[in-house]
Image 1 (cartoon, rainbow, N blue to C red):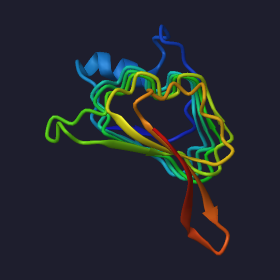
Image 2 (image 1 turned 120 degrees about the horizontal axis):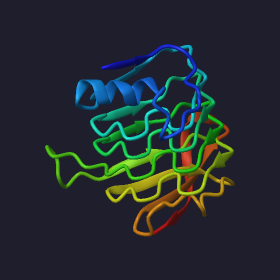
Image 3 (image 1 turned 135 degrees about the vertical axis):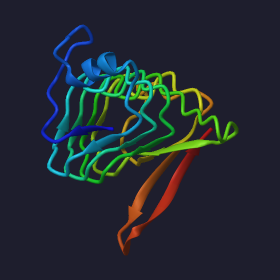
Image 4 (image 1 turned 90 degrees about the vertical axis):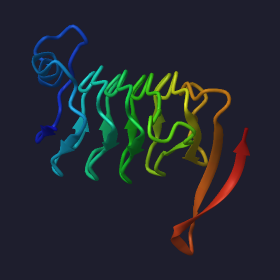
Length: 173
């Protein structure tokens, strides 16, 4: 496990100061789990780039921004949980995540973009070849998010009378 306990700053892919990439290099393998402290409010650019052993990404509830390429090339991810309150998903934030589970090779994977999100960067979900459904709020543009053409896109809105229920307003095959 790798523990992140402060806001995670921006890095560059060639930046040998990125502690998580250095950890991978020193261990000879990527950690399989990322544990975030609840106080983190942002995940910087390239913060977890190329950590190909990580299985699940569960972003803490206080995070409002996920930077460019923050989880790009995290090839083993089978689950992404995004918090209510998240505002921005950067370009290529989840690019090239295979959503491939060797224990369940025929699984279909789902990402729910919270209603609070106002910006999804270019290719944010590009090359995610096992992604099957993406749910996103009505009014959010995901045209450039790189969601593969075969992915079902579900537009939704929260029902005013019951904030735990949503109405699917459009299904785009």
